[in-house]
Length: 250
Image (cartoon, rainbow, N blue to C red; front, side):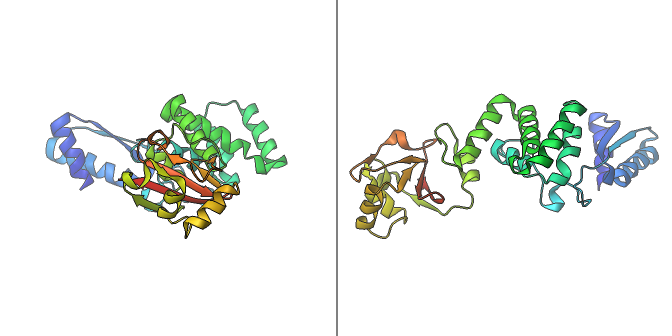
């Protein structure tokens, strides 16, 4: 089938070169041979070594670890996080592949990683460089802001896709806008299922243990206004440090 793909592109687009990963060599040469037999024409193939991890597993859809350049497929936040989570055994090699940092700079990052692995300096450098290269400065700032959100940072400015990616592991609930907008925070907290009763919600809020969009709310009489809604359709409720509830308005 891929041989016929090459033939079709040759016939309709005058394509004479097919580029792919080294695992596609057989498919590409099959297309070259098919075009030679059917069209008596000379075409070419160009392959590149696959990027793989230290265990030899390639990065791709078949391995379940693909990232896409299109922000509609992989948000800047998810893209940034992918590289931030790269294992220590792989990060130095990937810095040499994906960045233009000098070998001296990369050696310094390797030493810093050995001395202070918890800082993940090499992974941060890799994630920042590749995200900026693909999504620009704005995409990088968006990804970093979304990352900070997990540690109590501001949520304003994040879009719905990033919010869903950041809080993918948190429970979510869909509520009508009428249930949320211009309603008191106690009622919204109960409707979202974060508290079992209004009394429990009032005690939680008055005690300073409740956060709306990562901002503490300590007044049980507070009202959720329309400008509080993130990207026009989401709220993030939190109790304590890590108990999140994502509210999606419809």
